[in-house]
Each structure stands twice: as structure tokens, then as C-alpha cells.
Amino acid sequence: MTRLLVIGPPGAGKGTQAVRLAAAFGIPAVSTGDIFRYNVTNQTELGLKVKSFMDKGAYVPDSLTNEIVADRLAQADAADGFLLDGYPRTLDQVHELDRLLESDGAALDVVVQISADTDEVVARLLKRAAEQGRADDTADVIRHRLEVYSEQTAPLIDVYGARGLVVTVDGLGAVDAVTERILSALAERELRAVDNPDAPSAS
Image 1 (cartoon, one colour):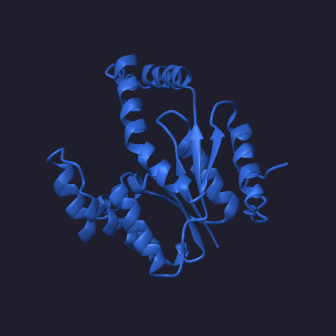
Image 2 (image 1 turned 120 degrees about the vertical axis):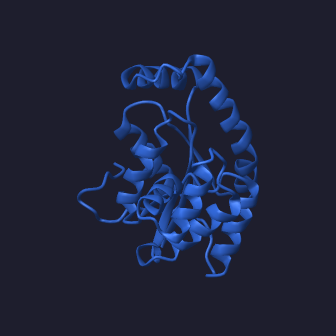
């Protein structure tokens, strides 16, 4: 079983690497954004609750986010492990995830922190904004988002770092190169990718 958490700032390629790592280890990538969209689209009971907040432009409360993640991790495909992307985001969510995993006698194996130079990330996101016609994504707006991310994430990294779970990998460069760095770092923690011909592997 492999249980991973991937953390990284906007523009660092976290989502791309999460999908590739999940494939490499043969585990589902559990993204809160994807879960929200799935439940809302399929009008599940949880999805209707989420939509009621989203329609008002309100923040989805931790209690509901926790409930949705717990529901997802209880599904059969997550029985042999999972990769979390976008959760936990707060210390309260960290404690709830601890409680959830401990109830099954489990715990996270590694927290992968994808780092990236701020100026490089800003340049990358400005290029993406131009390509997608998102004029509101200015350099100042992007830098503010990165500052908020750093403020919110730092306490989580401190908690997981104190447990010896964090590996930090440079997220800049070619996608394949970043994947290789992460897989190599995980191999050093005795976490090795499954024999999957469609998945990337460390050399």
C-alpha cells in the first residue's frame, strides 16, 4: 500500500505530477477539485451541499470537505493506497485526515513537496493566462496567490516535516525530469513504482 500527499504552489505542475505518480504506483489520484466537480455534476447528496456553497461564492467548509474526502477514500479503488492532491489544506483537515487513517490503522507514507522558483512560476502562469485569455491573472494577482499559498501551506509542511514525512523536489524543468526526481526520492524512502508499462519510472 502507498499513501501519498502531493503539495505544490500554483504553476509548479503539481496536478500533472499527481496523475503521473498515481499511474506509477497504481493508485487513484484523489483531487478535491475533481471530487467536488464529480459530486456536483452527478447531483449526489454531498454534491448538492457543495453546490449550495459554490453558488453563493462561499468557501466549502472543512466539515463538508472532510466528509467528501472520507467518502472517496472509502471506495474500493483506494483500498490499496491513494495519492491526495489538494487535501489537506488546513491544520484542521490534517487532524481529520489523521483520525480517518488511524481508524483503519493507516498513515501517510510520504508528503511530496514540489518547489518552484517564484519568478519562474509567475512567468509560467502569465503565459498560461495569455494563452487562455485570462486578463485578470496579472503578475500582482499571481504573486498574491503564491503568497497566500505559502502562508497556508507552511504550517502543514511544519507538521509533516516534524514527522519526517516530507521530501522536497524541484518542480521546474521538463515534466519527465521532474517525475524522475520524485520517483527517485520516493525510492530512497523504499517506495517503488509498480510494474506498469504505461507509467513513468525512475532510471
